[in-house]
Image (cartoon, rainbow, N blue to C red; front, side, top):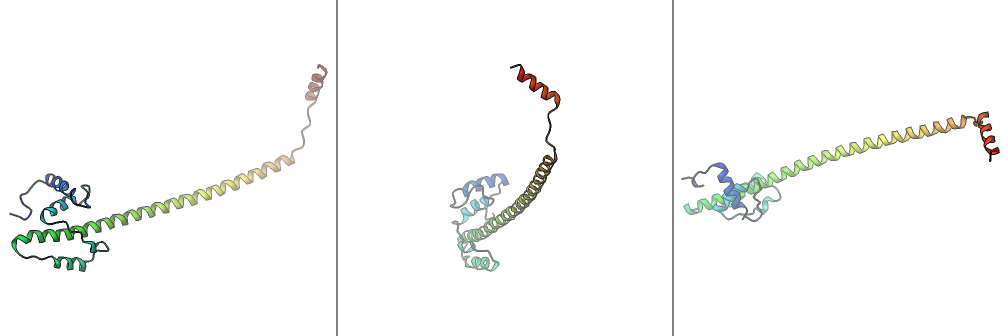
Length: 166
C-alpha cells in the first residue's frame, strides 16, 4: 500500500485535505496548496522553514533535505512529511514572489498608462487654452474695428414720440 493510503477521487481528496489545512496555522483553505498541506499535516507536524523566507536556492533546499533524518520504518513517513513541508514551503514562497512580481509589473504598466494619459490631457489643455486666448484676442480686435452704431431715424422718432406721449 502506498504511503498516502487508499486512493480517492481528486475532488473528494482535495476537499478533505483543504478542510484539514484550515487547522494549520498560517494556511487558508483558499491557498492553492492547502490540499497538499492537509495531507502533509497527517504525516508530520507542519514545519515553518524560516530560512526560506529570504530566498530559495537549490543549495539551501539540499542542505535542508539532508538535515531530515531517514531512520527506521516508523520514521519514514514522518521524514517524508518533513521533506514535503520543506518543498511545499519553498513552492509556496516562490509562488507568492511570482504573484507579487506579476502584480508589480501590472501596477507599473498601469502607472505608465496613467502618466501618458495625464501628459496627453495636459497637452490638450494647453492647446485649448492657446485657442481660447487666440479667440479672445480676435474678438477684441473685431470690436475695436467696429464703428459706433448710430441709431436709425425710425428709432429716434419712436423715442421722441414716446417721450411726447408722456
